[in-house]
Amino acid sequence: MIVACLDLEGVLIPEVWEGVADTTGIPELRRTTRDEPDYDKLMRERMALLDQHKLGLKDIQAVIDTLDPMEGALDFLNRLRAQYQVVILSDTYYEFAEPFMRKLGWPTIFCHRLECDDTGRLINYKLRLPNHKKAAVTAFRALNFKTVATGDSYNDTAMLGEADFGVLFRSPDNVIREFPQFPVCRTYDALFDTFEHASRVIAARGA
Image 1: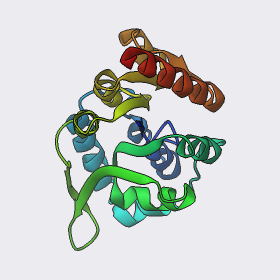
Image 2: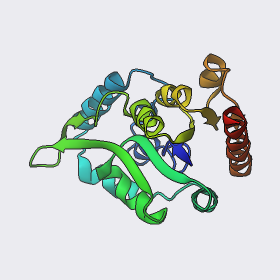
Image 3: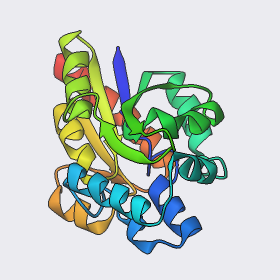
Image 4: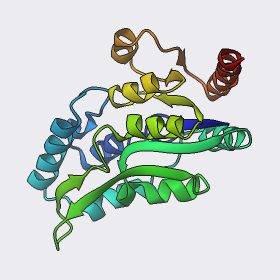
């Protein structure tokens, strides 16, 4: 049995922070893990910007409510679920993810938690554990599952490297250049075909 491990933002949904940046007019919030590999540094910068502009969790959630999964994402996800066990491994937060999970048919997602004060101001974030995407893939493999993983950003590459087969999806050129070992897909059809190819490669290895 193969577990398909998917990143969320950039693979199934638009980048949440880019949407927040566009709505609030704070261009610095457009920086994502595609630009900054140090996740803690990135989150500290985001929280400082939100604090500076007096924005809280409800403001971000209001933006999220206006966003939809990327075109073709739900069809792709349904095709994948018909043939594989699918788990979304994301560095987003449950407080952000719920509207998208509803629109995607409530897939399983492992992600993180935010901490807010009584006014809704973001004061901290709680990682499930460091490098949790890679850790999840390691755990699946320890349970004797084969894994195929896809993501688009720096924070996905450890997961891709740990999986039996990893593939980049719509990644920026800087990530593609730094990780040439991973094939790159630009469309959902190509990504589905790559999952099918990966399953055959994995089966051949075990033959």
